[in-house]
Length: 387
Image (cartoon, rainbow, N blue to C red; front, side):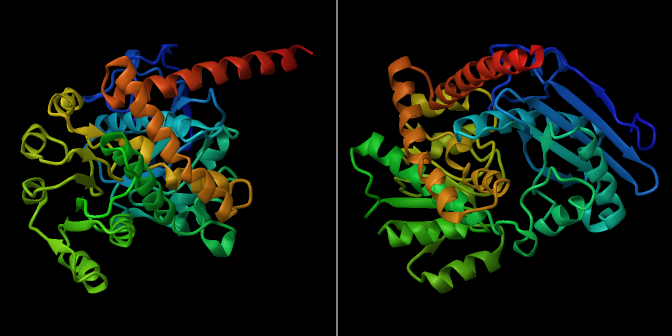
């Protein structure tokens, strides 16, 4: 890394007020002058081996909220590109979820199986604490609730903790529920009914969120076909639901006669070949960053495939961890998650009226909220500061 031990280097990046170049579906490596980030922090602690980057895209709606990803990136540039992309995506997700939080994300560089230790996590917690609440962290790839408990020993700006320490527990419960509400909204938009009975739904990835989504779909009377790189995950699903069919890989899944495709694995599922092979009328799933490249959203629209933007429908998890900051109440968090139906319906209606893909409509709706609420907060805080 380019910074010395335990010294936080903070620098501002020029901000574009309209956010036009910073939507979460943008492909490619972000450039500083285009991202619109408020702040990027490089963190290094020689004693623990910590190397991390914290990206704050926006605090217009409140403190930036987003998880910490622990991953063995090939280079610092690769890690930086990821944190810039992910933090921007969180700003849009949080805005559309109706949360009073901006968007942020952090990455710790390294293999968590090899270098994750208590001293490293506590050093990271001190860096988060040094931001004074501008960034609130949570779990992501490579980190768990138990890690958040350790980070919280140095920092109070932490959520997604274990139930033993006042946390909310497994966020996949509300993530899957939110995807189901988004799927029903998309079904109503496409077919005039929220019912999924008799609909053929393909689920790619039946891990923490995907297997719960399958439970909801089977209960709703859908005909479910799944794929997963893990044979054990497939076996677990079919043990509960013997009627669920399994195929080998997403290419085979896309070739099935489907009404709905639900990507619930890693990002980048929607490539040009996959979209061209789809018979599904709707794409709606839990995976982040489903569009593999620029132009895919237009290809989906041209083929008459209705895309429910992932960062709209998969926000149940962040709704849960945000609620945890106010002493978690499951019923309250569930009620907020159920609003994903209304938000999805609104996004699809705007897309139709404006003649744009749903991802563009979602971007515009998020940007409008960030701009309007951010402007009012700025006026209020400015007034308070001058009194």
